[in-house]
Length: 298
Image (cartoon, rainbow, N blue to C red; front, side, top):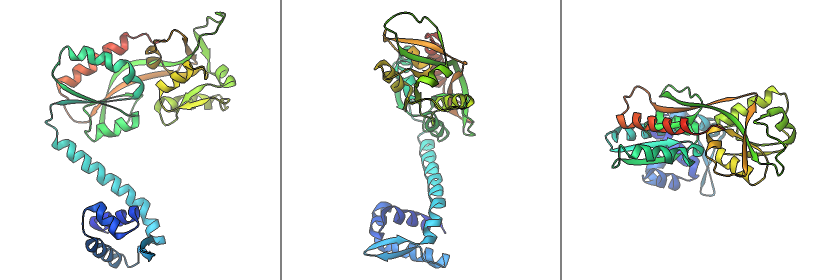
């Protein structure tokens, strides 16, 4: 199959009709029909059957589709990268950052950074760590701030800070528990708020639980560290988050205790691989490092 065959095949799979595929691809319906006929002639079998004005995929088409989806995804990545490269001379600092670090650390870092670059245009996007890694590899951002180590051939890493996992919970009515630490095994027996396992820290926490050979009892799962802490403040249970997120709280109702056994958490800056970053990027990283290192870590 040629690329134009694949584009038409994918568009028909998405829309179910030749007219819908034509609108999606911004071409005429006869052009879609002709390309589909050429593809089927080249393959030697039908890809679709017509049923009530709809094109229904054959078993061969259904077998091909997962591979076509992966190829289309890669083609979209090429398109996005080529667009980013064309816009390489833009006078703007594009920041990508995980949501919890955008709550307090990012505004503080921007205040510091703005003293040196008051007129520089800055855009910020909140994404999850794996999304930031992909976007930096595609040159869709100048610098990304993420949790944990990210092994990707398209990015380089700069260490910013080292923290740890902590337990955030409501302060007890009676001040009879002054412990600054809490055992994970203890929390597993009573249940706690954890981070989705698709998050690097959520994955680390899941690994720690697995080492105990048991599933946590009950509890909630939150998509972001900040939401987990909000749940804890509302009395829905203790939350296990990173020490940087915990440092951003201004609530006097919450107590922060180190989780045992200690689980280290790192914050990294991601940059496009093989590319010399502008001085503004280095200065932003330095400003962010200054802010996050000086913050209390719980």
